[in-house]
Length: 378
View 1 (cartoon, helix red, strand yellow):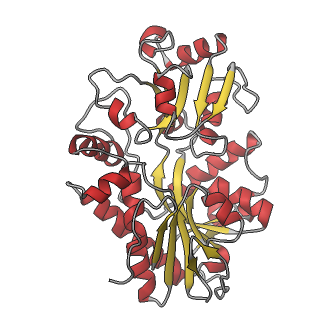
View 2 (cartoon, rainbow, N blue to C red):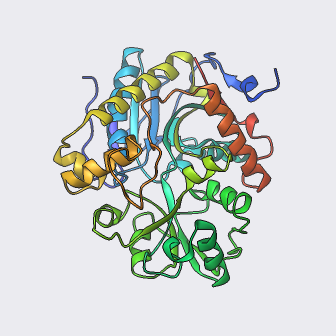
View 3 (cartoon, rainbow, N blue to C red):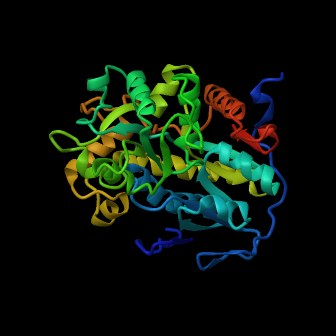
């Protein structure tokens, strides 16, 4: 198995060692013979039917990155047992690589898969959920938009739009912004689009820069993820310089709009089979179990997660896995962002179907999305 970090930050990992939405579930059915792969991905040449190319986001996402560091090794071992090889690349360019036919397996979301399907004719099977949306809307606690100043998230949004305030975010097709648009328009009645909507300015920026841009007053509010940029430093200050207005996943769940997801493990239909799907899921389960059991990271794991010390690690692990049962923080969500069960059940699929329907109402997904995307259950 070849594992490549696009930014050369880690070494290669060695090998070995009825009409309801359920009507289009992929129920453990073989999808035909594998097709030969001829593309070169990050220096790993896949040239026969037994080589699968995969991608996931790179370092700097806290415990998310810890899972992504473990997954290629375990998934590679499970695939090797059934006669396949896995080549893995860490990259932020997953969508383009997948749309270009250069990868078989990615860690994105079903709406992105639906758009690729419509544009490129690629059909995708969603195998399992990895993370719920970890992003929140933040303001500065000393600003007039602080919830302690306005009295409620609704009042904060009203103040931001009345003042033509600026909002920074990680990109229009990111896993955070798509559900945020649903939430803004359906729950808060705030127009929110690429032209700015009711905000004075809405600007896409880099994941790693948004927290600092908020603190340095480049933006009045930002949508970003704990675990990126300098949030790892800010979150443990006595008075964090960022204040959460709401967590997107929590707010959508409370409003009955469906629980959004950040990343799912997905595979091209022409590469999928029950044997391959189950091997990948076993690898995901092993990676999740180990990620949740680590108490003292190695130096390499610290670097890959973008964390600096044990205090940050303990905080982040509780943030992602325990829903902050033992800690309190104004910038933490109340729900776990990663669970120990990656396989899809009927409730999960119905919830995501509802989410996709809501995105469709806003013109943010193909009309016939289920022509391009199916959900796997054994």
